[in-house]
Length: 143
Image (cartoon, rainbow, N blue to C red; front, side, top):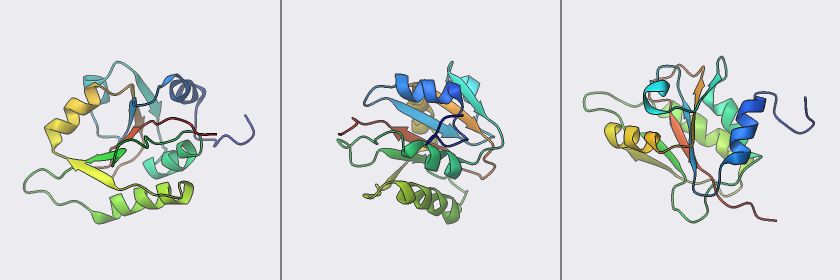
């Protein structure tokens, strides 16, 4: 165990976060997401909720300062409804760590899947809420 590192961050996830460059993206996927269909770099985080993972991660990396919305979630499919508590829970976790809490962009389901194909990695979590996936775009670390 390392001091100052949240215990939900595995050595594998820490290595991936370190390897990522500015502009790279990582998906924190809910337990239902077909991670292996869209990525060859899948990290398991079973039993860990996305909001907990957000809190543990965002203290270690900057979100991209050069885009308006460095956080991305999937829009509801026609006929479905989003549970507003999911986004609120994620925003709350982000805002506990980041002073200037960014907005979350919503994109259509298949556009989201295409974006995930370009992600550096997918973290398959224990999150069970519907539409519980969120992409983070890494930024440049400031001194």
